[in-house]
Image 1 (cartoon, rainbow, N blue to C red):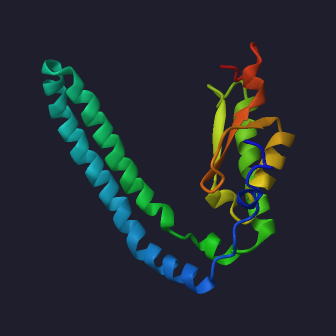
Image 2: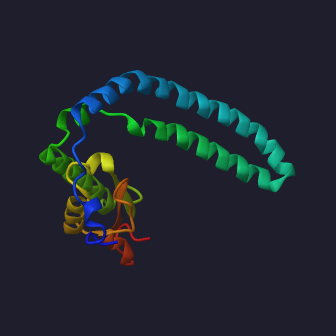
Length: 178
């Protein structure tokens, strides 16, 4: 997908009303600690259930796949509950393009360093820059910074994230090549 497709989605997001962010921040202060307790508790329960399903899986092959899919969906849904939370930097810097540009620069630089570091173990071939990191700067700015550092755009939904692929990964024999 190029940045010329759907130009309104590649632009910076609209500035959210401060009062709404303040309410969401207050709710975050109450809800997020509960989420931090509920998610591990559900994970432990699902782990114990998973131990029992291993015995059943020995008798019936398809049961284990369904159980794993259920556990993945359940934990993913609980983790997504936190997506509406508002952090203090988001509350303070809403509408501040310079803050979000610096955040994008740091994030892309960190991914580039991981992709080019041959001694760091397995180099990432693809990465995602979430909207939380690029909201005030826009997806177009992420694309410009990433392309300048050697990344390629992947098909993506800019309303949630910008997906990138390390361009050296397509060249055989280069660090990070798949």
